[in-house]
Image (cartoon, rainbow, N blue to C red; front, side, top):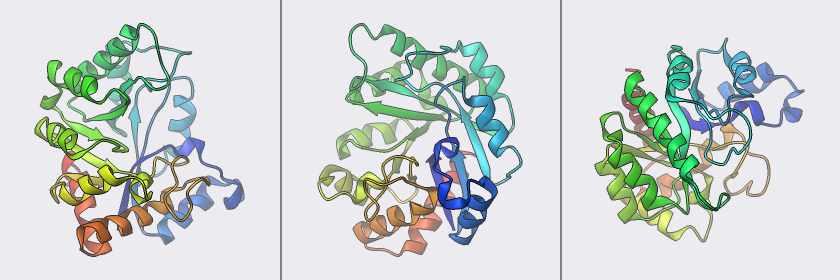
Length: 257
């Protein structure tokens, strides 16, 4: 029923699940989580992430290096193409720009972003975009580098409707996380009301950004229901309709149906 379009399964706390990933997966099935996209942050932990999820058909992967990662390997486009050629990899990222945690000359961050876009275009696989306090610059890079050829997701959307309109024009989908449930997220809520039904996704970004009523606690893909419930309330529709639309949109973007 639900697809979590962005989670970090190698980083969730498995203590409530007897430290057993298979136990967690059984709980996900019980909670009607049909599919999860497990997102890469760096290349050092990537092999272990692949090994964790390789036997589960209901989990897909991305490959990439987060814009905030300062240590470890900074991949070339060729390296991303090589890793991203695996059939289980359906997306490139997360990638983008982040001026909140990085400062000074950020040309290295821009070049990393361009490498990811180049790889995505070669592989014809969508991009997973992270942006923080760099919204317009992120869109400028996407536009300049021709990312509209392959599109992707503006993950964990935190901007306003004007920003969403520009992203939609570039062929990107808007993904709402638990932040949309926060009381002060007024611009995000307004955007959630306006995004076309065929262009939004839902996510948890777990183990981060748990939705109300779990705000401030560890997050899990099973909590994606709370994002769907809040969107249903904002859009004056049913949870079932939100689940169906977001699932259809995910499958269309990633050519799964």
